[in-house]
Length: 161
Image (cartoon, rainbow, N blue to C red; front, side, top):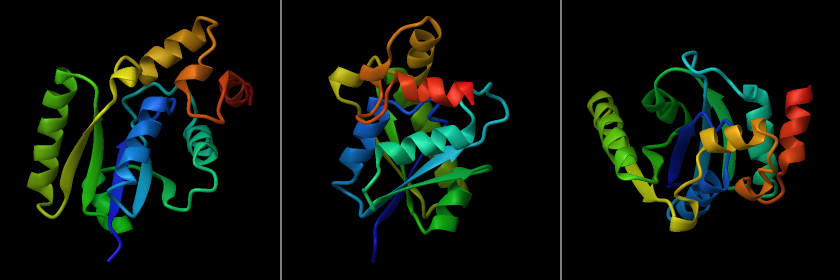
């Protein structure tokens, strides 16, 4: 039986920290579905189709990583794709408190879905999509914060379209 895990988030934009979590999760799971969520409460930096395209480019050639969009409950999406694990990355103690609460709520909704928390390496602890957006919007080069194969020019192309 194939072990499938879902890595949900807005990924606006997808960072090296996100990439690290996926690559480390691939040591445990056969397949990772990166689930780009639609969140009507958040103001988008990149259009959802652009986020999906950038993530697919970052994992080009890796048939163990799939990228999809979803709206609604993450546990419902897990059922749709045959996953029983949600992966979340932890950078800080504050992340732990938030993820613990969300994980417990997900478990209350579907006891078959487990949450697995993966600690971000110390090199990536400070990197967040918000920081990358702020650097980019201030004219900085964010290439070092994006997965290999992606660059500031990729964000430029998405935002010009």
